[in-house]
Length: 455
Image 1: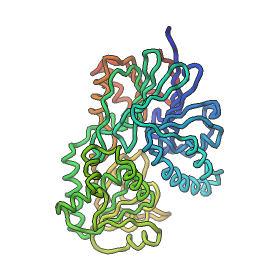
Image 2 (image 1 turned 90 degrees about the horizontal axis):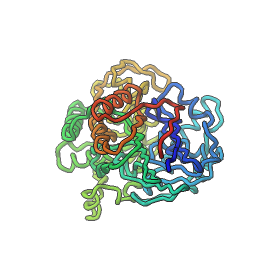
Image 3 (image 1 turned 135 degrees about the vertical axis):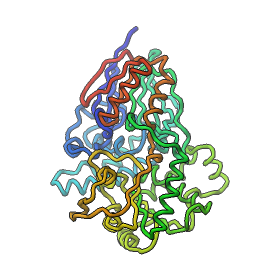
Image 4 (image 1 turned 180 degrees about the vertical axis):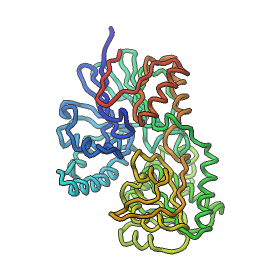
């Protein structure tokens, strides 16, 4: 008997962030992700606005991974009446709590600045964590109407997953974000076969990333050049995954004597907590890394490394002369302790700002890459005289070629692909390639759009 379900594209459609999709399978509703909108001119309006559905009417929320643009509104969802099950992998659950608590501090600052009510507080986060359960990859979760769900490794960050729903011989897959296999710590994303309806990301749908060996060589060269000039190498980095990847890579370069031994500072209390959570979940690492940990190696520890905890210590490190490496939050330079360092290094011709991840349109990181020569930091005009470099090989996303090949591997069974979580130009480019090269029906839904599928 034919069954019909409806997918509602409430967030992450026509934009990179704010992932939030709802599937109505008839007698139950299922949310996939509930993330903050970031980097958009109307992000504040979106984040503080009401949900386009009644939170209390939804019994299930599946979470693909722990990035804030996928989990950041979950406490608000709970505050507004959600009492159902929140389900993710165990590692995603472990990462979510410190990330949400950190995000809540930033949101509270925004609320005070703009005279808003609090989006949510620590009690809402605690209530969300009480509803949250962790399951393993490929562990079937039973849902109403003979529907099941399972998580499949997506290779994006620790514990990240595609979620596949199945019923009546049909299946629907939400990719979350897909890793391109370029993390030195994680296994590659699993090959997806037999998908019929696919809701997939497109962050780098119109770009091709360099080879891994280029990435490592570029990092080595950037460190050497910065040290030679006697300046600071500042790397704004997300506290989850990117910081751990870089920490592992810099450790390797120093242990192998491929770069000079200089002080390395991780200035992000959140990154310290996330690094500890990584080490507490070694089963999510690649087999090679697991073997090294089992052999007694601490993959994130080396003599040159210092974790910076307090604001006072942060100010002291920022003013230290001589060559040093600083990894500081946040990844798009749109807040956090990185601003304190940028006040020192942006006007300094000896120093280097290294961008290692996606920068949303309008973010400070994006404007610096595009060559802006004067920026406002902490209310003051700051000249940009330092060297600005970018290494995209550390991106935790598949590039355009990999995304196309990902779809190609499941093409024989595909009925339709919905391309989301990308800027409009990136999503539309990937849509066209899927149509032209693979002959598969593909669209890029807009925010608020809904489609019916045979599921």
